[in-house]
Image (cartoon, rainbow, N blue to C red; front, top):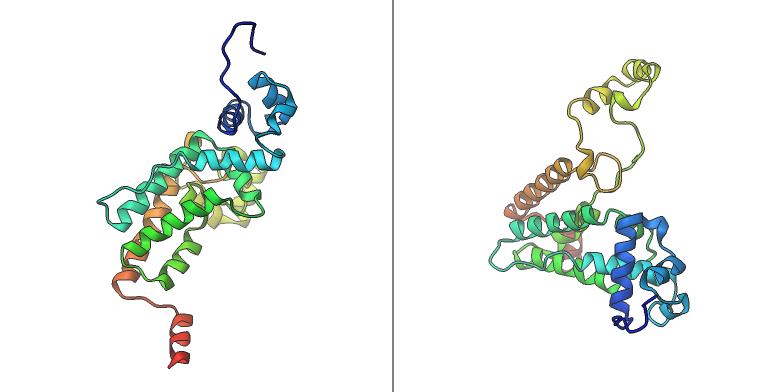
Length: 236
């Protein structure tokens, strides 16, 4: 609580969200509660409800605040460079706030800020001359990558012999030699992972570049989906 005579910034939604983000950065998502957040702000818990209706709205607002840190679209870049730059900016944001992906993955519906960000990415592709048909499939393929992280299928699966006991190593080598060969081909950088799994910076950039190169090739070849061709034929 503020001391007598000490000036305190007025409480508003932006200040509440900034404090919640800072608390999650420092102590993890598990530390977020109305009581702990109120304590950090030096107010009573009921004061928070004037700015966020409940914890779900608080979590959504925290994600919105994080996504808002991604740099805006840059003028003068072609679509491929623009998408890559902004995606890597999102990656840097997620590395600063790795807890945010858990909220995003659990959201029942995207917020206005999430929709606006997604729309701006789509418009970058469209402004580059890509068809809406191609962009539809590109957005599905990119998935969470536009927000700076990759959803791993089995995040907790061991990826190196050091994660296993000697007996488990022998079993894996005998039973799944392909997995062992690939998993041990290159160590991952744990300091650049968002969340867990194999989603480190190198793997993320490799995946983005691979996909954008493929999209560029399809665009040059005037690719159209089979569904698009069938719908066009039905109109004739």
